[in-house]
Length: 503
Image (tube, rainbow, N blue to C red):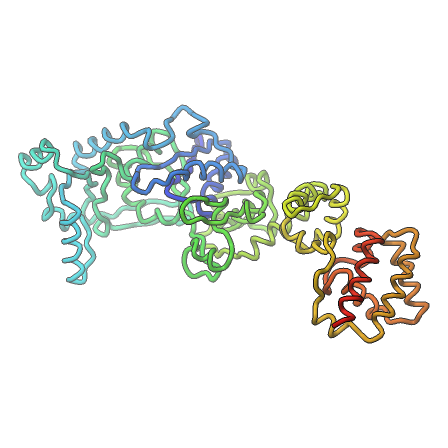
């Protein structure tokens, strides 16, 4: 394989969708696998849709994911600039080349005139296509006398440059994922290549940039597949060798019906963007929701690519080693929010308790609790397997830091008997007499007392948990009281008997 050069070329029109991150990731993996170069190019030719902050958001998202840029706006490189608006002066000469060769032409139709033609076609039940069948009826340099259209140019009349798609020609090409494809040119329109505002459209700009930047492979979303015949024709018109193409499958809604969108995330409560989007209509991100970047990357890597084995957990290095375009599927990949959580759970379980303790300490501080890091680490060990996110540790441990303010009524009805207060007072005395208040020591003492008295273990322990925790939840009871200490345990027994006994 010749030198591999791939690019991720997003438009700064809003937050980067997780599908866009997957496109960047596949390009990155392919480049690294083949000792190639990964380029970030910002395609901002559509200035009307430009959103302030979007460019930085894209870069920050890739950085969070661990996708390292080899050439780009800030990295530099031999083929810059890497922002299309900074390359504006480059494109006009290529548009003019196509006009000179007869492969493109000037079109002077106004938006109103085009809308009228579109409406008339729809009245007749047809779809309006500006192509060989209709271009002679429109206002362009093919239908007008040369003196007329040149005068329009001299007078500064607004125009666009359209590609002259040949009539009734079979256009064939290969896609690394889709295979051999044939399209008849009569089904295609004469796309605008250069706009009246002096900016090229995506079709011209990206193709010129890919050629000048020596891009070897174009790995992009399925939505660009219908445009590929035009791009193949443009390469032919310029007499350039095209790169190899691979069009990735869509990311689908959890029910598999249609493309995954922000609305789906809002409706079902999961993010579709890597980071929180703070501008205009805000949107939550995977980072802020507590996902680890390596878990997020692992998850999206498997949305469309199959390693061919049962392995599901991959580090970035393992993804690079295993990745191949040949194992990317054609059909859309259904996103499963629960599977995304599963991935984060797997990565959280692999983290050392001291690392998680440092993370959780920030959650505690935000709630006004200060705690020794070693004690937090011991707490993490008790609940780690129950959680998928660091923020969930609080839901599993809140009662370690604060005594119950209420008691679960269902548990009271089921577990609180007439003899319970007296039994708990006995238990209190047993615990108060414990000189060593560790989980091991108290468990041995309490179980011996229960056995000696002939009490029912479940009855005692369920009532004990109720007064200490406030509900039927939490890890091993003796781990809980060993952590909160004797004084706090006794206080909670006293308070529980007092409050519940009044009900």
